[in-house]
Length: 252
Picture 1 (cartoon, one colour):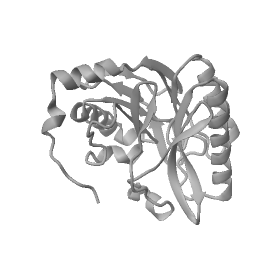
Picture 2 (cartoon, rainbow, N blue to C red):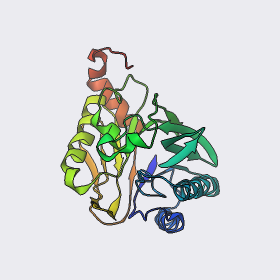
Picture 3 (cartoon, one colour):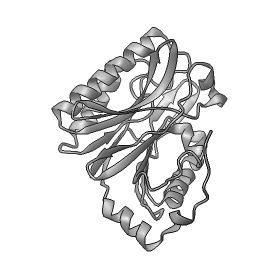
């Protein structure tokens, strides 16, 4: 599955600028199966959301829907959503114009006050694109391995993020760890630029099911492409059937 990681310098609450930047990167890689955008890609990591925030996010969703239909592809990214009096950091996957997946971020970044303005999701979600089962998670979810544990129910873990430069070493180490322990592809898509006091240096990456780093972006805004192969997942899991020995547990 041809996959493109889009690493944006996100402009706060400026949907037009962010959509234009995403569109430009998408057009550089035609005939792609899956495009992945960062966390809150159309609005920035907005911890005090306003009506302008949600309007910008709605523009982003409309673009994802229309563009996935026009280019006959899948597009994944997270956006803030206000619904029934609650706000969510929600990951969407649009495929050929259809919303195939919604996932509300489970682990809210209390250190930055996200839990004061957003409601945590309860369940993970999986979507089949081509012959790969995708499990998208959002940023801070990366620090909690139990929630991402594979029970032979996905092949690719995708983390969309606004992960700051000051903690980028943890980003890289944890992405690799999730690939090794779950014997899956792990794709991490981060942002670049600055937002308030925080600086972001990208480092979007892809790891193979054995933990090998397959792709690493630098701190520049841009995009990169990689092919994900279901046979590689099956090969590693068959040769080293470690998942069969994993501890059983239930999340509450």
